[in-house]
Amino acid sequence: MRSIFDTHTHYDDEAFDEDRETLLRTLPEKGICNVVNVGADLKGCYDSVKLTEEYSYIYAAVGIHPGCIEGLPADYLQQLETLLAHPKVVAVGEIGLDYYYKDNSPKDVQMSIFEAQLQLAKKHDLPVIIHDREAHGDTMTLLRKYKPKGVVHCFSGSVEMANEVVSLGMYIGLGGAVTFKNARHPVEVAASIPLASLVLETDAPYMTPVPFRGKRCDSSLIPYTAEKIALARSEKEGFIITPKEILNATKNNAARLYGITPEVL
Image (cartoon, rainbow, N blue to C red; front, side):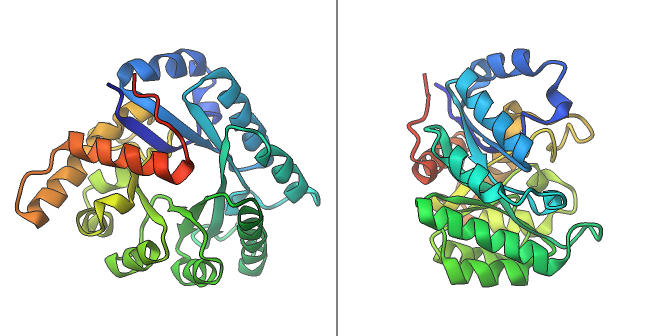
């Protein structure tokens, strides 16, 4: 029974160029039921859609990452809208704000591109995949305004912020960061939010969990994240929650979020 639903990958990334086909062909044998491959720039969006046509278990999200705004063509929204018509495109993403890297586009430009894509998702009644790095205040301002369905990926905010995200009807995405030595906020969030509001992700090839930090990440490593979350929730609740329970619950959550029937067999 396949129970791993990876809600955020970048298998179009050049890090997979040498063995992409072999890896993606074998992931179902390692327990992966579904993957959402997430575009960051227009090329990544087209490549993500192509992957969905080659592998039955892969779906795609299309959107412009805040770090990929420079040089964006004037018709980017029209191109995204065309891709949204594909039957295996299930979300608009990865979209949002990134104030960490100072060479990213100015904040007002990021806000404008983010807002335009939130409007696009609303128009098509699709969930969004949110990137929020060092931009919690502005991110929440727009989430409160548009109240999209979707997920805040690689969540790095406080428990209080997580609770507000959940109150808006959105999901919290957690990945390898919960296993990191100094990851206080992600672990607190993992232990505190309703299990029904949690989905798992890798952000492959990035955010590799302990004990594999420094190596390339892929969906088969999600059980290490699930193990850490199960431990954190068990300690808080006072009774044992198993990694298998976390995997099954988050699989069902992701399927509900994206309207996908998991490929469990």
